[in-house]
Length: 240
Image 1: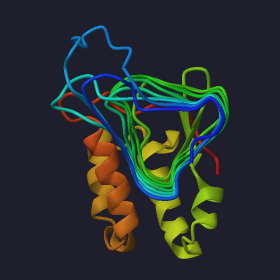
Image 2: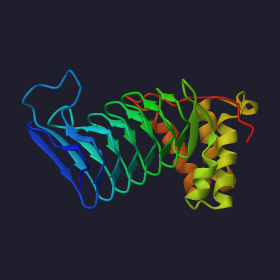
Image 3: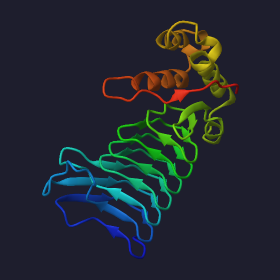
């Protein structure tokens, strides 16, 4: 149900579709034309929103920039006031975007991500599941799964320990991920081969090699260096 002054859809070719039980806050604009200068007047463009999303006041969510793409938002997301989701973003489910979170075009956000306020994410970045972005951060590179970043030019600050706990990860699973993080990123290991060597070592390290979450974390890190991706946020020493 749209709130007072909210706009859903726009008189342009294409379609905005919403699932069930979504809340659209006062003066939110959902399904407007994108702000990409490459958009050609008359092209069809699309926005698809799932179920049970709470999209709060003054938020803007734009349709895709071309007919061959689509802006997607999954289920059970809380998008707080004055957020922006630009064209061609792919948003998963169960995310929380605090006030003033701004996602540029083609950003991918997986599931169970939490941002603090006044966060900006550069176009084409990918934010991995169960990660946390500190307030006022500018994200210009990928954030791998399970990690916490913050800073004007965001840096990795360790695992998102509180988020993992709240989402039901066991103490053993967290210990395994912490051990893997230390092996990959801590300064004492920097001389222990190349970055790729350290990733490979983690994949072969006893109990770590048997942890689906450690392997998922390594896969997320590696994928950020694929062709067309932006690499990961810089990392600083972590003593956690």
